Amino acid sequence: MSQFSSAFTAASSVSLPPPSFYVSVSKRSFIYCCSSPQSTTTVVNGKFDGKIVERDEIRFGLPSKGRMAGDTLDLLKDCQLSVKQVNPRQYVAQIPQLSNVEVWFQRPKDIVRKLLSGDLDLGIVGLDTVSEYGRGDEDLIIVHDALKYGDCRLSLAIPKYGIFENINSLKELAQMPRWTIDRPLRVATGFTYLGPKFMQENGLKHVIFSTADGALEAAPAMGIADAILDLVSSGTTLRENNLKEIEGGVVLESQAVLVASRKALIQRKGALDTTHEILERFEAHLRAADQFMITANMSGSSAEEVAERVLSQPSLSGLQGPTVSPVLCKRDGKVAADYYAIVICVPKKALYKSVQQLRAIGGSGVLISPLTYIFDEETPRWRELLSKLGL
Ligand SMILES: Nc1ncnc2c1ncn2[C@@H]1O[C@H](COP(=O)(O)OP(=O)(O)OP(=O)(O)O)[C@@H](O)[C@H]1O
Ligand SMILES: O=P(O)(O)OC[C@H]1O[C@H](OP(=O)(O)OP(=O)(O)O)[C@H](O)[C@@H]1O
Ligand SMILES: [Mg+2]
Image (cartoon, rainbow, N blue to C red):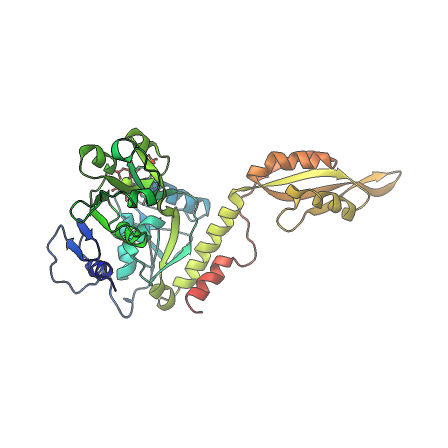
C-alpha cells in the first residue's frame, strides 16, 4: 500500500469532523492535519460493529432541510406514503401507510453517518453524500439508485482565465509542470474523502486540499485555491464565477437514492419487507411518471390484423404489445366489430411521434391519459438487493 493510501485509510478511521486539510506531496510524503484534535475514540468512522440494537420500529432518515427535503416528501406523497409531521421543527414523524416505520428528519450527511452507526435503517439522500460519508462501507446498500431528482455531478473546475486559459482536460491539468512538492495544485472542496481518492486514482501527485462549507466558487478568485471540486447542476454558479469544468473532471454523477443498512435489512424484523414495499411503490410510480397511456380507435378486419399494424410502428409497441379490444355495434340487426380500441403505453417524450404513427396506420379518436403507477412483475432491483444480501 502506498503512503498515500495508508495515510488515507488513517484519515478515514476517525469519526470526528472530516479533516480540514489533506496534503499529498508525491508518493514520498502525505501530511494529514485535522481541524479538531484527534481525540481518543472507540467509534471507527461512526460505525459500531456487531449486532444491531433491538427496537421494534424501522427508522427511515429523510433530509431535514435543503434542496432534497421538499422533493423527498413529494416523492413519498406521490407513492401514497405521505409523511405526517406535526410541525416543521419536530424531527420525528410517521407514515400512516407504514405502521412500523418511524421517520427521522436529519441533515443528509447525518443520515449516512446514522445508517453506519445503526441509528437509522433506511434513508434517502444524494449519491454524492452516500459516497462521501459512506466511504465505501459495505454495510451501506443502495436499494434504488435513481429516484429522479437531486440531479447533479461532483466535478472539478478551474478558472477560465490566466494560466488555465488553455487547459481543458484533467490530463492537461495534471501535465502542467508548475505543480511540484513545494507548490502543489490547491483544490478547495467539501468532499475531503472523494477528492483525494479521485486525484490519486487519476495519477495527480502534487495536490493539496482545503475545505469550506459553501461558496467554494469564490476560492480561486480569492487566491485561496487553484481549482474547486464541488457539486454542479445548472452550471450557473461556475459560470458566474468565471470557472469551467474540464474533460475527465467529473468524479461522480449523482441523484437521490434509497439507501439501507445491510445489517438492519438482515437482522431487523420487518426491515426487509418494509424496504420491499417502499421499493415497489417507488418503482411503480417512477415507471409510470415518464409514460402516457394512449387509447385510440382503429378500423380493421380482426384484432390480429390491427395488432399487426400497430406493431409495425416502432413507437407503438407498448409495455408488452398493444391491448386490442373490439368496439361492438349493431349493424343490420347483427352485432359486429368494425372498429377496435387499442391501449398502449408510450414514453412521454415519444408522445407526438406516437400520435403521428397511430394516425398513419388509421388511428382516430386518440385519447391520452397520465399514468399513476405501473406495477410490473417483480422488479430487477429487488432481485439485485436479495443477491447483494446473499439471500
Ligand atoms: N446544485 C446543487 N448543489 C448542491 N447539491 C445539489 C445540487 N443539486 C442537487 N443537489 C443534491 O442535494 C443535496 C443536498 O444539497 P443541499 O445544498 O441542499 O444541502 P447541503 O449542501 O448538504 O447542505 P448545506 O448547503 O446547507 O450545507 C446534495 O448532496 C446533492 O445530492
Ligand atoms: O450548478 P448550479 O445550479 O449553479 O449549482 C451549484 C451550486 O449549488 C450548490 O451550492 P448551494 O446552493 O447548496 O450553496 P452552498 O454552497 O451554500 O452549499 C453547490 O455547492 C454549488 O455552489
Ligand atoms: Mg449546499
